Image (cartoon, rainbow, N blue to C red; front, side, top):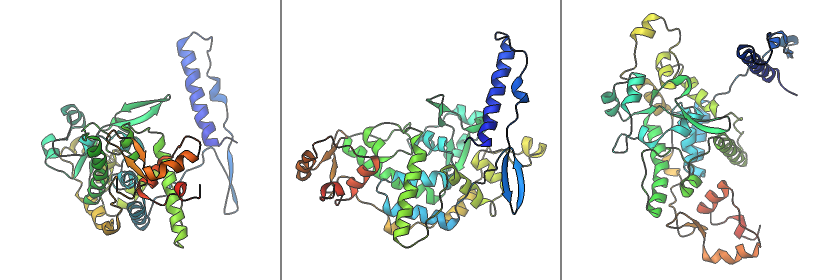
Amino acid sequence: GISVNTLGKHKTAMKNLWEFMIDSKNYGVTENVVLKARVPKEVLEVDGKTVKVSKVQFNPRSYTVEELNYTLNDALQNEYDRSIVLMIAMAAIGGLRHSEVVGLKVGKYKHDELMCVTDAAFNYAGYDRKYYEEHEELMLIDEAIMKVRGKEVVKLPKGERIRITAVPNCLKEIVEYALEQRQEILDITGKKLESNAQLYLPLVNILEGRALNTEKMGRKWTDYEKRRNKRMEKDGLEPIPHVRYHDLRHTHGNLLKIEVPAWEISCNMGHLIPDANTTKKVYWNDRQPFREHIINFFDSNIKLDWDKALRKSINDEDMLLHISSNGHLVIKDEHKEKVKKLRKRLVLSEEEIAEMLYNKEHTLFNGNN
């Protein structure tokens, strides 16, 4: 039941373990026997021909412009938690990796008094600080949060490459839309938006004042996909096939490939410039990052219907849940007796909390519980 790809990874790990035991000279091991082990091959049928492979090629699926536009507008119009559309846009329009979305701080996006960028980051990556400060359509990607041996670790982005990424106007509008909801909660609880806070933060995390667990982000994307596809089926539309959250970053690069120079895409995504010779590697630099082609592409192709976006305020009078000044969720008085009759502790999922903050017709209180 284990794929050949997984077996190949196991062999690599075991090979490294045997090399360690040989080098340490403490285990009586003198030969790396793993090198003699053979990974079985997968048998595939391609147009009636049998092919044996030691690694099954994975071909990620990218969204089309139409699928991306539909998804962004669906999230804008149907998800009360505004962080959902921000999560999608950060990967698909911003080109950020999962770990970079989790690690991005407010001060690396903002270009006002909250801006917080260090000389060390600019010196390490070779960027012109003054140029960056003068261009609000740019943000600094210098931090990634990922799970390492069961613990969340803050690191430089993959490949130890700090980069500057384009912020098209369509992405800026989505960020400000999400921050508007967040600011409402901060105003209720008497707190301020801090420059070192995570830029992407789900509604429940904002309420509880805690950082996002990096492992939950993939699930949040998959759960949203299911809700979107149910809405599509209800409207008689063919659901959009499942993609991984990382495939939204693939979408970013794939959509840009025809109209934007490869070097600009690579710099924006934190990759090496393709086919780099001495001239490109030594003489070309990104000190004053040019991202205009990327900005123009997304601002020309992303169509957001802001007239239909959900803009219901926090603590609207017809909401089932109320946010108190200390950040607690409070069930309104007219519903408390119904909750008591349940004779058990009321436990809500994050999606249910968002729904109850928005929807006065939740099934818990309409007799269908």
